[in-house]
Length: 318
Image (cartoon, rainbow, N blue to C red):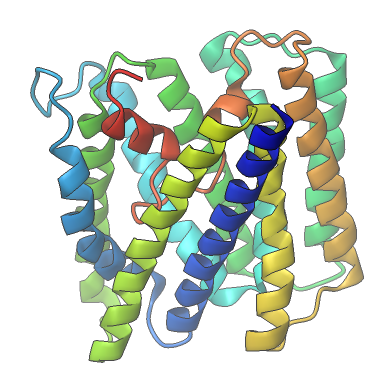
């Protein structure tokens, strides 16, 4: 078991490195192109890869959802999380974006109460409050000029958390192909329509980088699946926070960014709160659904879909 947990942790660390590279490419292209344009072409180029997996879903049915209201809401959340995340990575230092996105497990914990009927005790409530105070430390209103990128990162965390909880609520009542194809179609409509607002002609090399975003997003998802199959969720899940290390290194070497004190302190508070919530769910506590552990948290975009959906497509009976 120890060896399996080590293997799972290492696979998750590798996945987070790939995801961080995915975000670095977004930031690189974001210096030249609008975020919605990058997302449009990255998701367009991901469609051939995703369509191969979609064909593995042999579950009888149509593309019309069983619960259209929830699927439409999740689609809106996935599109919003993608656009907000791409914009935040394009305009803010990488470490700041990750620190804010790390609030996602805290938001999942809150949303699981009304949507999943989850019981949250005093310990996890305290962790949520402490963690959200860490977000304020990172944002330090009054201490720095808050930009649209900060709001976008917060929207990305909220939208991704709501999308993750909706997946948990729907369970296996919706076909995996429905839960993946609807956000893709929604993304094409929204970002494709936004191209008329400010399209910038893309060089062939930049289109290739957009394709790299798609490949990295799927590769990271596959590694996350392997990590959770190898090790215990309570061991694997905290490895997602290693992205702050990748962000610091990439930011310093590639973009001349420095990790300032408030961001480091706030990120540490948020990470500690998130790990505590993971530990409480893993050890039982009051958690019946274990929403944070089950969500396999990573800000969802069309180019980096939830690994839980990828696993359902690859192993429909698993």
